[in-house]
Image (spheres, helix red, strand yellow):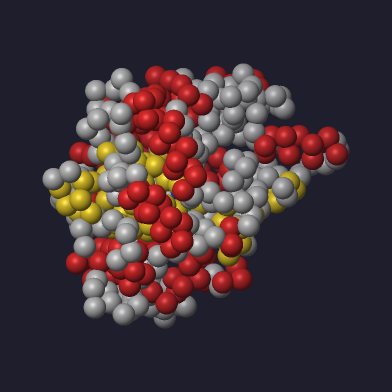
Amino acid sequence: MKRVDDFRLTFGKKQFVPIMIGGMGVDISTAELALEAARLGGIGHISDAMVTDVSDRRYHTSFVKNKLRLYKHNIDNSDKSIIHFDLGVLAEATKRHVEATMQAKRGEGLIFVNCMEKLTMNAPRETLQVRMASALDAGIDGITLSAGLHLGSFGLLAEHPRFRDAKLGIIVSSLRALQIFLRKNAKLDRLPDYVIVEGPLAGGHLGFGMDWAQYDLATIIAEIVQYLKTEQLAIPVIAAGGIFTGSDAVSFLENGSAAVQVATRFTVADECGLPKKVKQEYFKASEADIIVNTISPTGYPMRMLRNTPAIGAGIRPNCEAYGFLLDGNGGCAYITAYNSEVARHPQAKTYSVMDKTCLCTHMRNFNCWTCGQTTYRLKDTTRRLEDGSYQTLSAEHIFKDYQFSVDQKVALPELARK
Ligand SMILES: Cc1cc2nc3c(=O)[nH]c(=O)nc-3n(C[C@H](O)[C@H](O)[C@H](O)COP(=O)(O)O)c2cc1C
């Protein structure tokens, strides 16, 4: 019976344990979590979502405070289009985060940054270019393009000295998305180094409509693997979404995937950025508690726990401080939803906005409990403590469980000593 450790992911002349821990913004996939994956010979991700805020918290900068000071006069204005990001500040914040992470890296693995196109920041091209270029300048091993088709993203990097040496990959949820990406980038003579195929059971935003349940990861992978073979394109395919055990991973590795990307199992790792209390919510969840809805202003469906505080919270948009989802015209679907609620109830003191959420604020405060479909199984991966809470696990334990387990088994951690 095979185990994940019988396989290797090959990039050029180097080989890696074929386990990638997926990017989880905002600082849920922390540097500490990514560093463990790299130390153990796999690949970890940090995320550059809301990187100015992440820098403030980790490195005691004041980027968000300074931006808020600059735009404070606009707080009561329902129009947020004047709010812009200082590209120099964005570069500095990205560099700090990436540099600090890369300096701490040990072991043979790699660390990539997850770059979501949907963080449009009222200047989609310019800000994305700065985010990616600064991460490369600061020594990141690779960039995973996500949450968008990224048709122009390789082009934005084409002049960068590391464009051909850094690992660059993209997340897709269909063969069609991959084909469009490859066609658009054909003239750059630079293929992606890997393609992550994310199926409908993943956490975060989904690359499907609300009909997500009709899709199946193994089927999409089979189509993509066949297409790449026909086109004679040797791009490693990495399966993601709902891979809960080492045996689940092996079945993908035996059927054409070069590695797996996993995330949900690591949401309850000690190194994961979610607060302790939120980790307990993930443990406690039953299958019926896991829902997919359309409250994200990005337009993508998102999976989360039913008791997520962000649902229905009608807070004032916080774009003067954050504003990471402002589109190129300074709009955001939450601002529209909030403004129409205010117009409907001009005298109200508080609001409930059901159809959209202020995602920046709620992700920043760990109040949007996004999760994968398998979250309800997390309780079976650990021990219950005397006080009724669940024991969190080390990232190493979870990583090695994926790497070495067979027969759908999940190894429980040693009982924590008080
Ligand atoms: C809490 C959480 C946050 C996530 N955030 C992001 C993100 O910011 N960007 C992204 O591309 N994917 C995100 N994802 C998706 C993961 O990177 C990964 O591809 C997917 O969840 C793998 O499936 P699994 O969770 O079933 O293992 C997130 C997943 C979780 C569980």
